[in-house]
Amino acid sequence: MPVNLHFDLNRDGFAIFPNCMDHDTVGRLRADFPETRGPDRSILSLPLVRALATSRPVREIVEKILGPECFAVRGIFFNKTRQSNWKVVWHQDLTIAVREQQPAIGFGPWTTKAGIWHVQPPPEIMSGMLAIR
Image (cartoon, rainbow, N blue to C red; front, side, top):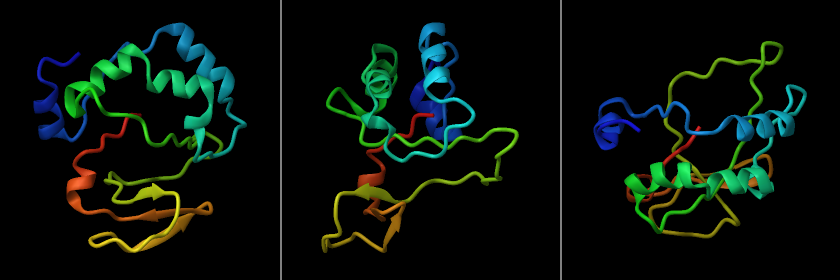
């Protein structure tokens, strides 16, 4: 674990955790997500992914930033292989997925991605979120 996780995140916008997953977990993920598998915006519903999101190594990292009450809200899989790759410039996602469109002060604009509503929330909502890749 980095010596100062908050410093790495504030300075670089990311932190790297080598050996966060054991070889067995990596093997199971590779088996469940072969190169032929297409994009999926709902992988948090898969038992293996849900178990990873709540695993001790992941929780130890995330709780240091967000606290013990944090929880996973979404899992997305984009399969970037040598045969199907696309360039994505460095960016910060500014929208969150929601169950339905509801008027709310400070939220907007609204979009849909793969049939799922997305909205840009106020900055204080985004500052309480952390992407794990």
